[in-house]
Every structure is written in C-alpha cells, then in structure tokens.
Image (cartoon, rainbow, N blue to C red; front, side):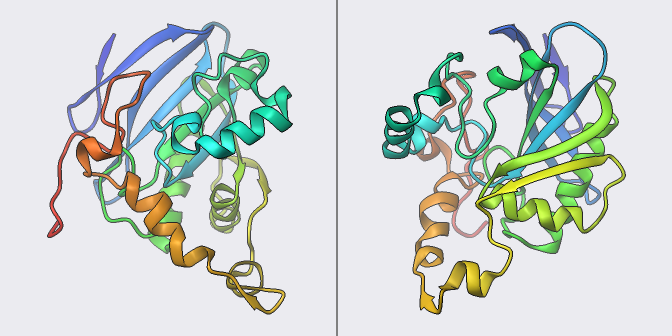
Length: 239
C-alpha cells in the first residue's frame, strides 16, 4: 500500500512475520529536512509503547552483511540471540523487532541526518543531531499507533545519544536503556585508563562514511525492500 510523505516519495506498508512494517516513513525536522524511519508494530490491537533507535549505521544494512565476523561470533557464543526469530531484521546494535513486537511494542529505527536514507549533513553527536532525535521521539509519541510512551534502547553510539537527547527532556520520552556507551569522551573514548585508543581514528571511515547518504550502489541494497541502503540520490564529493 503506497503512502506519501512530506517529500512526496512513497513508503511501503506490508504485513510480514506477524508484524505490520512501514518502510522509509518520512519524519520532517524543524528545518525541513525529511529523515526516514522504519516502523515495526503489531498487526492488531490498540496503541502500544515505542522502542526507538536513532543513529548513523543505516537501518537498511543487515547485521549479518555489514558485520559478518561479529555476527558469526554472536551466533556461535550466544545462540539465544538468533533463535525464536527469522533474523531478517537484525541490525547492528539495536533490538530485533521480531522479539519485541509480539510482546506489544512498536520498534522504530531512524537513519540519522546524512546517513542511510536520510539526507542532510552528517554531524555525529552534535546539537543538531540531538535536536533531530528529540523531534523523532516526539513524532513517535504522537502517532495514532503509539500510546505516547517512547523508550530508547541500543548499544554504543545508540547508548551515548540517549543521554544527550534525554537532557532535552522530550515530553514523550518515558525511559532510556543505554549500554556499552561512553559518557566521557576523554576517559571512556580517547584515553581509556590514560592509554590512547585509536578507535575514533578509524570509526568514521569504517562505519559511517560507508553508509553516508548519497553513496549510491556502493552502499548496497536492502534485501527486504530492494532499495538503495543510502538513499536514491547519488551525490558527488562537492556536495
């Protein structure tokens, strides 16, 4: 069933694996930029609480494809994570909707500004990104399928930006569940125990730039939708 959002491009709704899934739902920000969200929710019933993640790792990139060695280690050492689910919608560091929707939750994944299928300028951990996250929480809290209570979950990046957006006190934010996140960029990120970490030297090039909005076919296609993971526009270096 096609729908049209703020930028007139359609998004698709389907019922699959016992869930109603809405792909690429438009969420307009206060400056007119339209971010894109995937929504997984129960097929029937009244309004439900929401579990949301907002980040730069591309909602259309499957965990198994984007991080194969981490996937293999997880499946081998923690087999409970890959049982009771088709693993079709498993993404890096966020919840599996097939394990939450049956318990009466909606799961919302938003591509942060400039990444995945959301246009704009990439600016990790910035005030602009935190304001976007705030507005996404409020958007989710006011949908007719939402009961107005939005919880945040996720690992690492998805943990750190929970603390940041919580500081803005979005009215519909009911809970946060950050884990394996850094709260001090010096002690937790750059100089752990006083020893310099090189993680941030490589993080952006390896995990963000590869799925930046506008990289075209090099970002791959979402196997669930056939869409380009990094948006329909191909941008050159000058843009």
